[in-house]
Length: 311
Image 1 (spheres, helix red, strand yellow):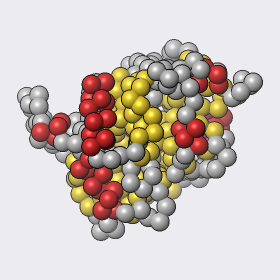
Image 2 (cartoon, one colour):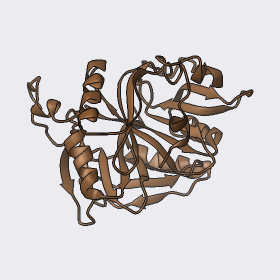
Image 3 (cartoon, one colour):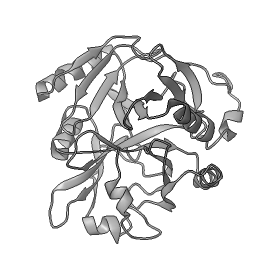
Image 4 (cartoon, helix red, strand yellow):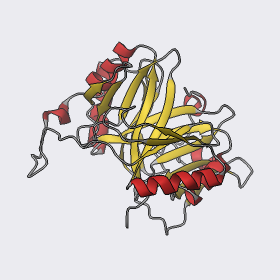
């Protein structure tokens, strides 16, 4: 599959209410590598197998949640074209100058109908990891530092107008709909799993009355064994778990959901479907999400906190 236009999730800026505790969680417990701090006090991190300078940015704030989600595009021409297409869709765009984020080029930012800020950018510095870039070593000590996810994988966002979001992502940004859930007694799609690659998903949305809410940020693990290892580390560090370890029916990924010290939910995720844009999306009913094991194959039920707690 040719990779053009939007390539992959690139970064997410997370609000934490205590930066020291946030860094301890994401760097020391989760095991991300700290790659820099900027003049405004933001902290930059990445997974052990990531080559970009960063994928996670932490900012101290009075309220938890997400500031913005950024996607990498293949080149400056695509950035310009996508900005024009987003404007033609009816959304205002803003150019954020290069250097506003460390080691990152100019970004195009716009608010989508769910109330979230999405960014596109074409340039971010590649920085070598300790395994090397030529004949790389198969092992790094970072692979055993904390929970040690390979990379930032996706986010699930809650907000209104998910039908308009689906239109924007599929008809303007070039994503394909991988899976969806219809609302009770309706054909209306109330939850979307969208991909710009052949991963199970690169971003997801669920309908919610309040705009701009974060449900979770997800980190990819090499295997389900590493997810189980993550459970041990969470227990040892008194991290409050929401769901798991279990498997989703939707995406077929292995998972644990838990909360950071500010109340932001994060996921350790492994496996998942392979998707392609020519394949029709997989549909789930609301009943299938619960009793059908769409959310939790092991327990085949809904989880109230999963449906209601967002930041």
